[in-house]
Image (cartoon, rainbow, N blue to C red; front, top):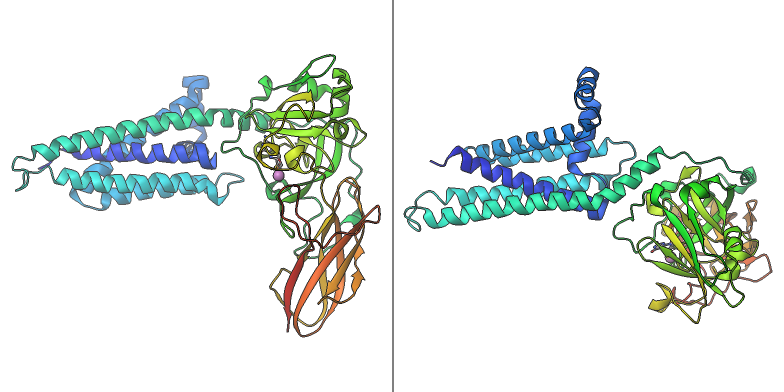
Length: 508
Ligand SMILES: Nc1nc2c(c(=O)[nH]1)N[C@H]1C(S)=C(S)[C@@H](COP(=O)(O)O)O[C@H]1N2
Ligand SMILES: [Mo]
């Protein structure tokens, strides 16, 4: 007969391994859904008020620590129970761990704003816990004297080593996960407590005529949750705004240093700007439009007084990413800003909280530095930046482009009048016309929605008299200077794709 303690130890080790794996996944990949913390948050919600108040009265600000320690104890006791059950009534122990994981999933998904990804750490926790428990229990059964090991001593030694190692690695993973996640959690908490200041200069209201009411057409302002995200950050930099600083360095008369509090005291301006990624393929979705709140970079550069020889600003993010922006794009009259707000919200963490750059007219890789901490005034012939080091062009003005949103490509539509619609953009130049072509025929002028400004994309629509059969629809934009979008196909490397977006539809 195997002792209670041996069987319990398999469960404790399994739980540690599972929670460790879950915490690592949550810290590195999902940056949310820490199995222990989501369960903790659910417990806080479920616990009756009198108990909450009692704990706070007893432990004061240590109340959270008490909760986490209590959860830890519950987890270990449940683990011991799972180990004991698994040995006597398999697979009851594994089922118990699975139930624990399901509770974690439930806790993660019921948090406000949770997505399915947030459930992943709890699934990993349960999965690893179940696998480890299964194999430790099998090993433990092998320690009972058998023909291979008459007194069970060999396997017993192996079992003890395996269990102790698993428990130690699991515990270490929990610690590493916590340490890694701290910065992110601090930033998330600071962001949650932060109220955006009122703009000194509000953005002109979005004209009612800027939007067509067509199902499937991209909204003219992209909700933050749907805004594309592109960056090299495996781990979103967690910046505590109270220690954030921006330094303006390099070829300047005066170095400038600015804290977050300094920045918020400045008269902040709102502007609506469409951001595009150079990696956006023809017809791609790496583009979004938002109303940003920020401070014009030209005013800060004016304080620093760049030397006349400087022709570039190398902006750096807290995690070491860099962008090289032509200095004129940051000193001319355009709305190149240090942004703190996005569509009335503090910048989301993944979009650069607390501060990022937004520069109308340039692709993100040469302008839109998130988590920005330094503006180094320099020269193109002196330094290069993250993507220009990797074969992308030094200059990255956004290219005139257009996209068909509806009908979706490959769709079946009914014969008759079909709404064809999409967006067209040429930031900082503006779009003056969009044309649509059916099956290589003549170009028909589409109806444009009102422009918000030259810095934003523009919706367009075309009422197509669709006849039965298979058809190809193409779109082409014209910018405010009269230049027509090229049909010449170019890859995204080195300075952005060109070519016309086309879709195939079947009319029945
Ligand atoms: N710190 C940092 N900022 C960055 C990047 C990055 O990798 N790191 N990527 C840039 C690129 S290539 C683009 S297209 C935009 C995308 O901004 P978004 O993720 O807010 O849409 O951010 C830019 N800013
Ligand atoms: Mo990009």
